[in-house]
Length: 83
Image (tube, rainbow, N blue to C red; front, top):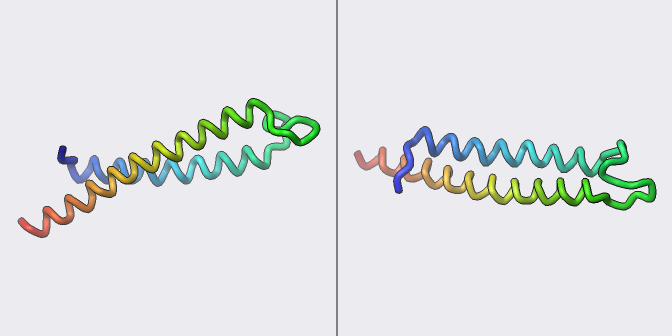
């Protein structure tokens, strides 16, 4: 399958955006003082674990999508040099 240059850049940008957004989210989750992420004893709550799992899944998917985009960008650059 061949991706267009614009689709490749979109996928790469989505991968980078995903990492930026989810790193920020995890930092905010870790520093949560509202009582949602940690109980009064300082132990993680179910809210914390569910959202951490969501963030990890998003990191993995963002990485996969970004790598596909990066490969597409590289392939389109190689293809444009041979034309």
